[in-house]
Amino acid sequence: MAEILSDVDVVVIGAGPSGAIASALLHRKGYRVLVMEREVFPRFSIGESLLPQCMVYLEEAGMLDAVRAHGFQLKNGAAFGWGERRAHYNFEEKFSEGPGTTFQVERAAFDKLLADEAAAQGVAIHYGYSITELDLEGERARVEYVDPEGQKGRVNARFVLDASGFGRVAARLLNLETPSDFPVRQAAFTHIDDHIDDPAFDRHKILITVHPEDRDIWFWLIPFSNGKSSLGVVASESQLARRNAGSPLELLQQCVAEAPSFARLLANASYAYPGRQITGYASNVSHMAGDKFALLGNAGEFLDPVFSSGVTIAMRSASMAAQMLDRQLSGHSVDWQRDYEEPLRRGVDTFRVYVEHWYSGEFQDVIFFPDQTDSVRRMISSILAGYAWDTGNPMVSQPQRRLHALARYCVAEDSD
Image 1 (spheres, rainbow, N blue to C red):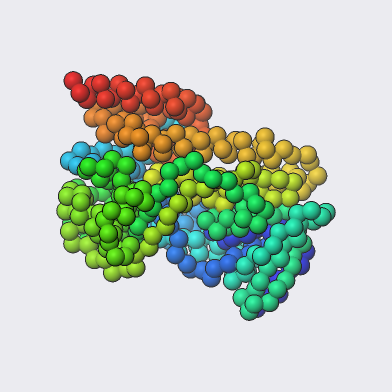
Image 2 (cartoon, one colour):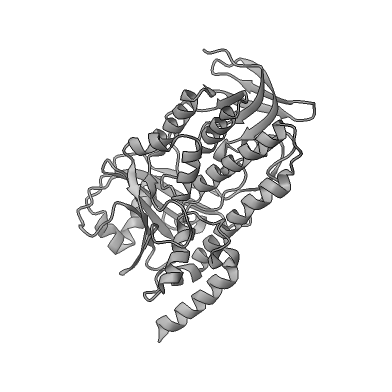
């Protein structure tokens, strides 16, 4: 086992996308960075459909060439289905500047690739380490851990970045967790060998399918480059409990059967992989940063998987935090609330509006409206592509008012 440093500039908890990017960016600035990851990579993770905004941060961290060379499935948009209705958005036809394509990835391979790239740049990454205590009271942060052999240890650091995702290590240890105001939902999911032979099916797009009767139940289908797909269903606890399925996989198959057009698409699918289920994944915290710590991505707040925003928020937070931390460690005064948390939350809150209106049905009314103007399509495409911080987009600068007015118009026109 490689010897672990006892005194560093930055400890990063977690080697997922935000941890890999933040550590690489800080290492490039000359800081001593130590990444401590509980799992051993590769390991399964959910969140396989990236958004084009992610490409900006992968390039910034010097990892984009490796991602492009790996052979992941190209993604250029999003497709939607509801009964016999269809809609699609091409991310290259968007309002905001920036990349218009990205990838759909098996996270086990993707996360390992990013972590390996960070390590190749010189970042020290240690796997199998569990963080047991954080003490931020002294001059330096004290991080206590248990190593893979069960031995306890301690690292002193000038700063701690929590990139632990759903593990939410710092939020738990520092008592930062607060209840989310999102309704409790469940997701049942798996990987399948999809065997889709429909010539109209576009593997370059994630497919979001709405349940034909319950509009707040939806399915994701994320095609990979190897003939596999990620398949999942999201619903409230009570909706899934009524189905009396024995296992997550049986529950998922039962739900798919309730959506005839979706079931036809997957008629030849092989369910050869384990099913999984998560409940109550929405989360929030009282604050995301202090003078010796910051939370990245899902370690701070997670909304909902419907628009694949999780990895984008994680990567953006990594980029922002690395810039803030470079200024602080260089001796400059910084305001984490004003310059990190508030700007990050503005984009998160934009996503929040569209998630809330997806489940209320208003955003679905807009998505499936057949006569959208080109300008509206481009604005929506930008949000779906992850550009939720582009306040030049009217659907970002005033999301609540614009979306509500647009939904009312679409419903009125559709009923004529």
